[in-house]
Image 1 (cartoon, each protein chain N blue to C red):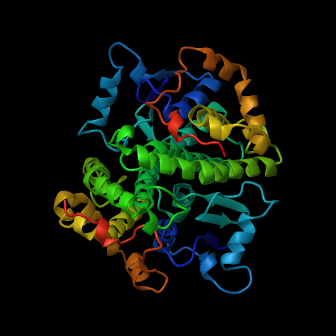
Image 2: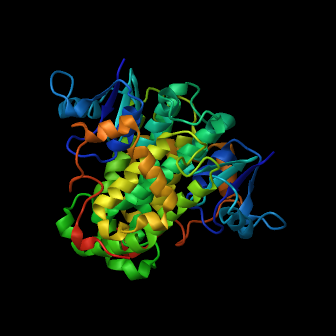
Image 3: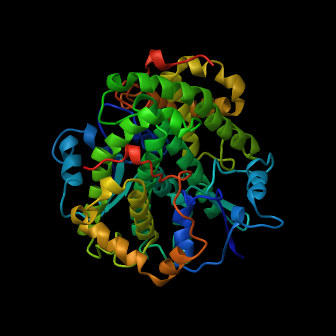
Length: 243
Length: 243
């Protein structure tokens, strides 16, 4: 049975980290909300999320349905899918290492979101623009170097690096790091200028993932949505800074 | 061999979610940074975090060392410890359900942190007080009801609830929910007033956990630090609101 991915239509957002893993593995999956017809579409997602019967409902998309099981949160979905898609380390202990790295990516992505929504998710960006400028400046000066510096160091200290961050084979964490680099380039082109010199390991990993045949084909396909200002990574030139 | 927990001294913080699980299970563990003598203390943590040899270093505390394995991030540590401490669901699939709930707690806790640090972690609260007020107001009006309402609903729709959020036995998620309720009461006493009427299931769970003998003994012990204004849950009366 096909995996069912539930996520908002129209944006890459957090769902994209899951899509990249499914696409790399050529897994049989349905992107439920983006489909049309009976049992798919946005309504199908809301019907599920609003059920007063189904136990253990997710808090928010993305979530994955595999038969009756619903798995929520990107890192959890990838932890679940990893071994099934051949994208987890073989060593059991290293799966916790991969999950720890993925959760660091989760935190980083949440901070990216808060650069344009520092006060409230319920307000428009335009209503918290000054605060977004302040938060983005701190993000660019302090948080990007802290997070990318950390990933670079782990890549360099991994004996199978820098093309891979855990062992010497591809894992879903590599795919997610690729997506983070893509997103940062879209959102903060000034801040990311010359990043390959500062983070050579990440640049190698990013290029290696982009060249993988299944990923390259996916990126060219209609299934890959463009970045836009409804997603997590948003390009607001007024908050971007040269460092 | 004893588990080694690495976390900042002087605060409950994120480490507390791990401590509660270790204490409930009466596990053999060392709270490394809080110890004194050779091989323990803050230096021991920094030596590890700053190593240019050790592979797959954590981004930040808390992390758990079990022999050579280092597991980072609260949810990941609990996912790892859960089955070992008898605090995970027996059913393999439900472990992903538990992890999804724990990651929702992680997100909620990150939002609690940002109520006092909406602009930058590197600035003092005093330097972002106006923004903290605005973010706290949105947090109290929108996010507390959204998150607690969600957990309440899952408790009510769990056939083994409301004392437990997954199945009908204690899991680490129940312990973490207890801690969240404790922390919210400390940080936002006005906002939490009458919470038991609005969230009766959570109130039942909270009381049931508090009464567990190992938890009750721990809460009375010197090992349980008091909440304070260096932690995640901080009481700044000026940002608290009656709803």
